[in-house]
Structures are given as structure tokens and as C-alpha cells.
View 1 (cartoon, rainbow, N blue to C red):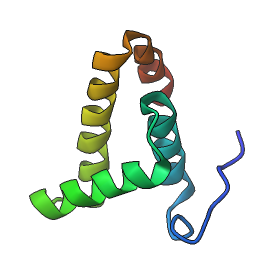
View 2: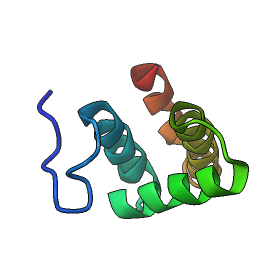
View 3: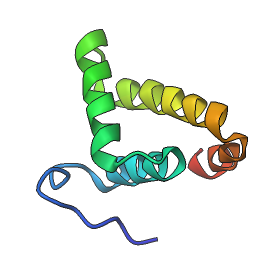
View 4: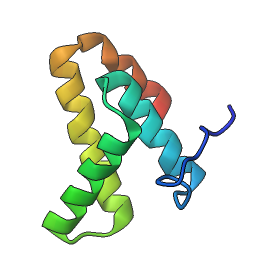
Length: 80
């Protein structure tokens, strides 16, 4: 799979991080920028490492999406 196209905001992101943000955006009907803002907010609030923050925020975003669309659980298997 090719990596998503980067813009000036996402240029600094590692490809794996951008890919995860894109996957979450697609199942939640949010923008990639919304996902990144969520991660940054969570990081500043909890003062944890980037990897930990992305993992916890991604789990929360996915659980919110499942409340709206139970079919979104299909992503869990492919994202792991």
C-alpha cells in the first residue's frame, strides 16, 4: 500500500503514523488533521510518550466509531 499524500501539516509525520491517522479518519468520518489534533490534545493532557499517546487515543477514537458504526470493528484486525 502506498503512503498517503503528505501536506504541509503532515509532512513531518512518519509514514506509519500518517497511515494510522488516515485509517482512523476513514472509519470515523473525521479528517486526518482532526485525528492529529486529538492525539496532540491527549499528549499534552497526559504528558506521555508519542507511541503511548497514539495507541491510547487510537483505541478511544475506534471505540467512539464503533458506538456509531459497529461494522468499524473490521479495522481492528487489519490495524493490529
